[in-house]
Length: 65
Image (cartoon, rainbow, N blue to C red):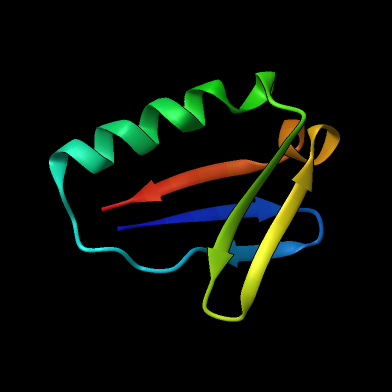
């Protein structure tokens, strides 16, 4: 399972995690809450992606099983 973020700067894929229904639901709730955050970051295979509030608002997030 992983987060995929489609932004105007490109597509960023988070690190793959072993699927767990509990974790999937927890991360899903976090993604629902994102528009209220000032910033968001997640780890990729190449480093960490940091997003401002404006970037979050303009991004399509996908939580892939």
